[in-house]
Image (cartoon, rainbow, N blue to C red; front, side, top):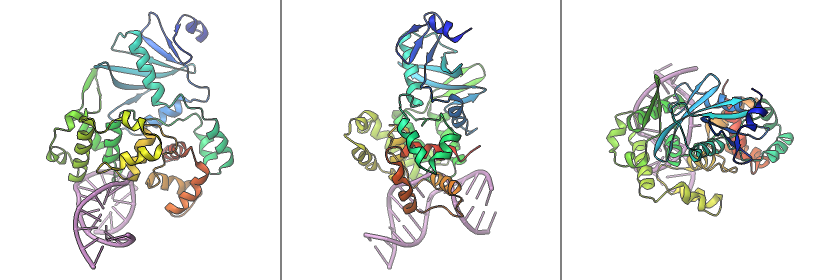
Amino acid sequence: MELNKLISRLLKISDQFVINDGRNFVIILPPKDFNFDECLKFLARSQKEVLHEVRGNAFFKLIKLSNELVLLKVMNENGVIRIDFPEHKLEQNSKLTAALYIWNLFDLGRDLDNFYELGEKDNIVKPILNKYFGLRVIGIPDLFEALCWAIMGQQINLTFAYSLKRKLVEKYGECFQSKDNLYWLFPDPTVIAKLEVSDLTSMQFTSRKAEYVIGVAKLIADGTLSKEKLLKCKDYEERLNMLLKIRGVGNWIADYVLMKCLMELSAFPIADVGIHNALKIQLGLDKKPSIEEIKNLATKWQGWEAYVTFYLWRSLYE
DNA sequence: GTCCAGGATACTG
DNA sequence: CAGTATCATGGA
């Protein structure tokens, strides 16, 4: 069926979202510079990922909508993003909420014109911008998940980090079964807050990491820390400082979380070895650049550090 | 066997 | 206050 014909039969809720009257899906009209397949490659970067699945040309994600677990199937259909609900019959408001979730996950509201302009003038950004054109920063909307994922990833290879995450999620997260597949939600902080350090060391966390994760869970569970509070801060500095007060959170995690959870454009986890390796390759160096050298390069990236970082990470695989 | 992974903290001189 | 040890495991 022709796309225009299809859309004409849909109820248009806003400029971005189209919701079908009768059928069980919702369509997002992404900006024209968005490339779903590029984002899919990022999502498929690890076979060990437990919190979503890429199968064929679709991306499956379990989310919680008004206390109900809902499975999303997200795919590209003739240049628009289509979200199916394979196991649920949803009200329009729930469909809209799911669409907003995906909208924010892919940072679709962002106008990237200034980033492209920057790319024209920068020899490092230009080639990766062209090569992965259409890629957007893909977020981790849940603050607790973003913090835990970063803590788990400290100073270990990503394979092992994924293994730690899988164990945590499969033991303490909620689960939904569809056909022969299980889909998981990241554990709730109120659950993790009640754990002992030994509950996590028994699944190969270091005792340090176990303390950090439980500590963060407690802060979020008792309301001391929340995404809302971070969003209310007046600027980047204030948000950074709020995160740096947390035990286990250093500069790398603070910037990582601002970038991936709050979609902060100026966030730049400069200590990240992934950035170091990507720059080494991009610049053809025989060793990784120093922090000072990177700071120097990054003066040209002001305001778009998060996007440069994400494109550099993308350059590390496939 | 050695070295390094998407670091952060506690300890030491 | 800057250096250094420590964490725990897997893959190259």
